[in-house]
Length: 139
Image (tube, rainbow, N blue to C red; front, side, top):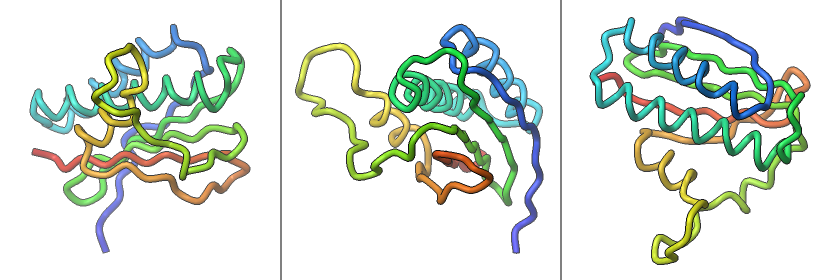
């Protein structure tokens, strides 16, 4: 069984202005573990996109809803869990738009899947609405 080490858990509100601090927390946390610049940039991008999706889609831009970010080290992987308390999402409806469409927006899901090794929704617990887990091998 792989050893799990919780590096950080932080709670923040569903406001876009909170994301600067969250990006900094993610960057500093993975940097301390000796991750490469490429890995750091990828996880910061993916976590930021996931948070923005929670704010915009799960919470419909309501500014006073709670989001929890957990960063764990599991074996040779970083694990990022984003927990919200919104209505559970229909996982079948979450997909990126066609890359052929030339318009802004709608590429966050595509980017998350492109830069992370795994992106999955876990069964919610602790009264949570949704738990999104992002995994990235340490390089």
